[in-house]
Image (cartoon, rainbow, N blue to C red; front, side, top):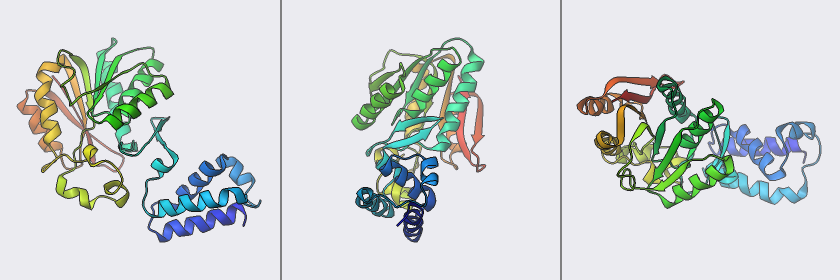
Length: 283
């Protein structure tokens, strides 16, 4: 069987299993197993698929057919033009979350000088680390801290910090518990915001494999927004800003919490699908 025939067969199997973008996943797994680039696969399309890779490739296709996340198989997730390491027990970085980082960079440019920044509920570290690296490219080295309650998230954030050479501070903390005396100019957060009852309606690869600790925003999805906003009085500097990722139907509720806490210039930013994705506000 040639490379092309093997890829076509794997694509059909994934498609029949209901996997979204089956050809993409089949190709990425072939690249992963053979250590060949996309260009090399094209150039070798009519060559025989090496027998030494058959068993591993077939086994990973079977794993993917069972809705096991591609990023957990390859241990890689692209985010903001960086490649983050992805592992079980930590939320996989997603394209939509890049909007939060983009808005944070815009806000930071408005503020000017080097800032003190907090990434709360950091997971893999993709938000805080990408933000730090992008600011450094612009010639500004912000003091960036990342916090999470999960030991898995802290370990993975440290791994990504070292991999991407980001000089950020990573702290195991239940929100503000271990940073009691610190104040920040900019706080960023993609907290758990899925309503508990809605978790069962998520895609199988999310609800069955990604950590519910990073998904479950309790009964109404607002638990962590409330806790974070309650602490902003003590932990956000005057003229500081908060930027949240939100669920597509949560803007009014989160806006209400921010209004109640006397925040101003509250704005919502939509994603490419036209859905509410990010809320930003100034103290």
